[in-house]
Amino acid sequence: MRFITMDVTKCVVCRNCEYACSFQQTGDFRREDSNIRVEYYDDVKICLPLTCMHCDDSWCLEICPASAITRNVKTGAIEINSERCAGCKMCILACPFGNIHFDKINMVSRKCNLCEGEPNCVSFCISGALQYTESKNSYQNNRQIFQRFIENL
Amino acid sequence: MQVVIIGNSAAGLSGLEAFRKKDQSSSVTIVTREGEVPYSKVLLPYYLLGKIPYANLFTRDKNYYARLNAKCITGNVVKLLPEQQAVLLESGTLLPYDKLLIATGSSPVKPPIPGLSGKGIYHLWTLADVENLAPYYNKGKRVVVLGSGFVSLQGAWAALSRGLDVSVIELMDRIMPRVLDDHAAALLATRMIKSGVDLRINTFTREIERTGDEKLVLHFKNGKSLTSDFIIVGTGVRPNIEFTAGTGLKIDAGIVVNKQMETTLPGVYAAGDVAQVPSASGGDPVVHALWPTAIETGSIAGTAMASGNSRYRGSLNMNVTQMFDITVASMGEFMDIEGSESWTDENLPEDQYLKIVLKDGVPIGAICAGGSELISTLGMLRPLIREKVQLQGNPGMLKALLASNIAQHQQTFIKQ
Image 1 (spheres, chains in turn orange, brown):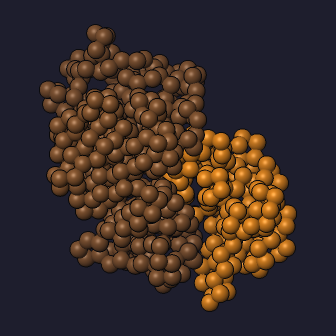
Image 2 (cartoon, each protein chain N blue to C red):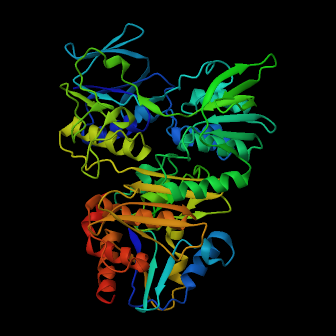
């Protein structure tokens, strides 16, 4: 499977990924509609892009009371079916990484679906911080990157 | 091996699925007194709201049991017979078991108010309740909701959104006494009143009177009264354990279980709302009657029944909902207790709220009210609360702090 890796040392907070994701989802450029979020901490000059890691044991998937969350067998992405989602927000509370967001217009939860295997955020990343790479475990990959992040904190 | 599971909601199904991961060959029978196609209780208010269609209340398909090589039968278990290792159904059928999972859930309790029964008076707990309520959810109708707990307020919110006149009656001096602290409750109450809910706290209902034109009149102790088309009673639930009477099964606030969901009877397990389970805090065991706890404990029981190898790390209280245009959530020990300190996010606007309760630097609970983003923060805190990891640094940089914790405590975050 291929997953998105997020390199904090390369990110320059251009927010292209946020706009690219928003455009992919809604056809418009609203950062609050993006499934990838870049946190910027000015005092320590840290840029932290965060998007779903499609965990092996996905607590969001197990807990969803509407059976709206499933794994796409083709891409490996954990996906939310917005037709089934009731908007109860339990998945947002379940995600230990803060990677599930709420669509205030349609009142459903929303998260990264890897754009069916061609993530738009990666395509428009200008610095190489985001990569779509082959990996057995997306979390392990990103953990190493986070490790570098704290060393810089 | 013959396995019997009583109940086909969150805990029962989670138990079945976990069991089948370890054991594909044993015979499994699920007994339900509701429909054989499982539905989700959490979704019921969303159906009344009109957010989801009726069909989406059902969260498994017709072939579900066949796929899991299990049999589902409709029946009401009236007696547990531990000596015979069997359960007796109302129909007279005897179902023998080697392993039994009690996942019978809980039922609403009704306060002893004269006249509080009959047509127009319902709970909001089962599919049958919602089928009774649905015809009343029409513009212009008037509903009184007794109690201001989680489900009650969701029912009130659905009614208000559908154009009904809504009154909420609470005996105590504030809403959601068990789910929110004073400040979050006040923020929610303000939004409810602004949205048009007639909220009455400190109000004791003396009796219900029926009028000739099918209306219900509630008489209160303070001398006031209120006329309504229907009443939703949401004043708490209790575990469904009647069929275990006389068996010697140890019961406290629910069926007492150990970390593997084993009860005090051999081969008998319990999970979900019916069970009193270990607490995540390590304190006294709890009956949380919450969806996530039912999923977790069901899964632990299923695994334990198949292999004997699973350990529950304890139930962590968690609640979340959005209603009346505000999101509220709470987790763990969110009330200030002796020896605890709390950190409140001072950067939030006045109508938003985030508080983290810590003991010796370890987060033990959190609560929020406002936007959805605040729930993400609670979600990131959850592994730290569960694993009792110190939150070091300046909470003003909470997100960065939590992100650094993701890296430092890999195990904590991977193993849910």
